[in-house]
View 1 (cartoon, one colour):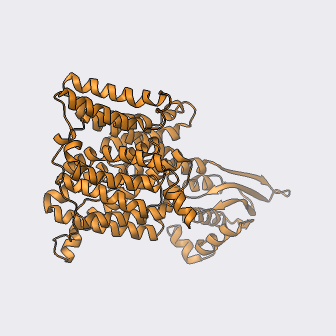
View 2 (view 1 turned 90 degrees about the horizontal axis):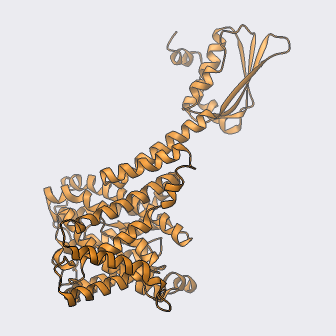
View 3 (view 1 turned 30 degrees about the vertical axis):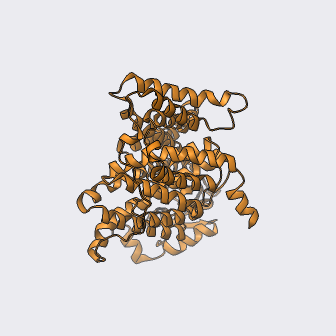
Length: 496
């Protein structure tokens, strides 16, 4: 127990502390921006980011992953806030948390095994593109000073690690933010700062219960939004956890993460915050800055609150160019450049799934739709590929009065037509033996195809014998096959 606590919390004190500070600084403008997207006061996003980060540090299943208010979630809140107001958003946030806890207990995170690597790669690349696109407004219609500061920030981020002695000991994104802030303060140049994004809160969050009537009508209003928020939140969190797993070569408890996200969102709603989830950009910043344990997530949340409440005068002077440089670094580091090189080596179906996921996510800005399209395409390609792995050979019996068919492969909805087409129902033979010892029947469609084959042969006056069914196939065939039931046979064949 003690060893586990030490490993998850205190095995990387220096790296976690510094990376947590970097993440906290990067969270501020994003939380404000996401609040503006959702149509609420900036403090709603800031309080949410603080609360979610702190709670998930204790309850989450993926150490080192950062969760806070996110753009994907904010986009889903716009209509609810516009039509019903902030109080209904807080109520929807609480219900979102409850649904995510239920999902955790139902072990719905196990469904992630159905998400192929090509979908995950497409998801990652799409988010990298979206992160970069989100920085473009900060680089358009601005003075030359912004471009110089941004380039200087990128130079610090990529070159500082090569300095002897200190290059590896301090995260370069933190150095970038501090140096460019000092340059801005002493130069007095006219560029956008964090303070220009919105007013920072000057008080600690307080407990409050959403001021909405506890009626069925209220539930019907917030339920559709809560379902969407919980699905998108869990999808992004599970995907981000998978990416952090890969970056750190460690595992995570996805079902615990579902419950943790739910508890964090309930806490956020009770403190006046909006719903949130894991953030791939901030998580990558945390990992690349040296963060590994739960302590980094906790420090990010606590430092965020301390800075916006007690150090707002200083934080408001951080130039946006510094944070843009950090986020460009994140987008470059997040994008899977190997996936471009692998386009020539990978099968066309894999490339189509990856590219489709990227295009849909970037086009719709909806991660759930993009992942759904990717999973659907991957399933269709897989079903088509497996359906083609079906061979049916035949040979006449020694006396020439019968024929034996040997079926090899998988028979299911995608291969049932090929299965039926392989039999010659017009051949004049007394008996047909169908050897199924190397075949497997998966679904009702496959069983119906077998029924039709048997029935058609019998209608031609041919005796049919099925041999070699494995136990699993025999179970589904015995349960659903109707070729030995005259009434069902007439119904299946349409009475003809």
